[in-house]
Length: 166
Ligand code: SME
Image 1 (tube, rainbow, N blue to C red):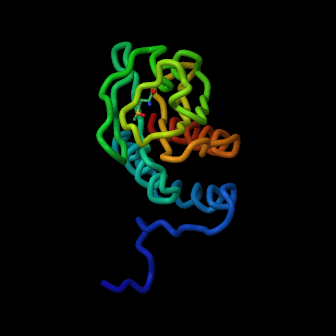
Image 2 (image 1 turned 45 degrees about the vertical axis):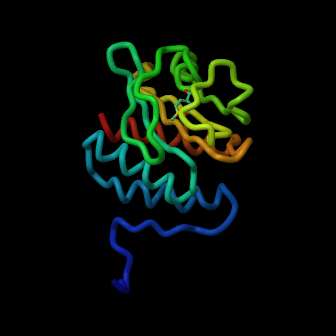
């Protein structure tokens, strides 16, 4: 059906380099979330919006539950359900409480391969009052697809997200 105006839920993709795309994306994401407080709803829309805008292979959240990371809202192929602290890229980012960029997942000791198509990855911790409550995991089917721009932008996004969902 033809729509003369985008709905509030439509994302307008800004053309340009990565910083420009993030610059157009973040305000739209904040508008999309609005004053919604529900954690699942917001994590689901953030995952969908990131995947739709950047075409990443897999975007999703793992949340700390009873001492493990448990799969949360995501977009992409099915993924492993639970990850132990210190295991894989996600478990390492949790343990270190820092963002990890992996240019080649096959070169990362202990990488957990949910799909052989995933080539590079960035994992950003969700930190609430100094404690990691989960991670944002983004996978690409291209090698070395993530850099400091992604780390900076996704960290800001996660900080904002934590402030919205709690
Ligand atoms: N590769 C991750 C596991 C999660 S999947 O990529 C969705 C890791 O090594 O922690």
